[in-house]
Length: 292
Image 1 (cartoon, rainbow, N blue to C red):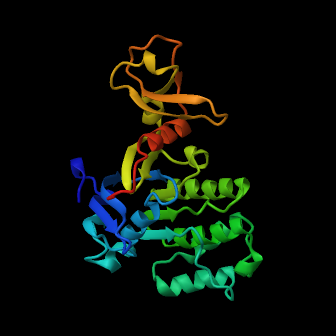
Image 2: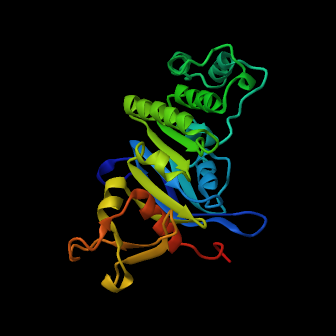
Image 3: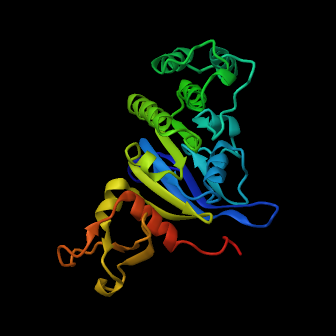
């Protein structure tokens, strides 16, 4: 579908719901239209529905209700046309033990005629990953980078990265994000990075979407979230409608997330960090399982 002003959305979900045999809803009533360009963080706890949403866009999960689209294409109506628009990185890279890094690039080239093997090789060279190394000879970070190089080599306009940082050490996560940011800037592509590590994505992502219990709780740019929220000193100081959630800080201290309204006395509130905003909304959205 086309956004206002004729701009095509990179990704869409309309009334999306996915229910498994357990009869619990992994996603319910999700509406989302993501403009093209930049990197968006898809944040939420384990079991929030992040992977299910990404797999629906790739065509790995069929919606129980509602629909999804990639650049206006429904993957269940035209799987081939939708998938060619997407570069996908799973949490655990799908690598073959007996194939070298360069063998993986060659295989990708046979499976996808538009695969840019030269681009993928340059990404591996930047990180000093040997072309002849097999996955068992690579660190977790290097395996993740190989998965990213394969996704970038597709030159797909949309990149979906399903928690690729989860098992990486801080340095490997930083290197991964640096390559991703550079690639998106150079190619003008759209990326969605799923993660529950808020601090790791803060510098790389311009927009944050929060999922919890299968529902979308929040969708805004990072500057908007920081500008619109504060940590209040007490509930008594809040005017009606400002309170978002109360939760514990890292040292166990009570924190109160509130909406900024421009009328508070200067000095009583302090700016909220992105992590505090996200945790606050997760606390506010905590409820029994979706659909129960």
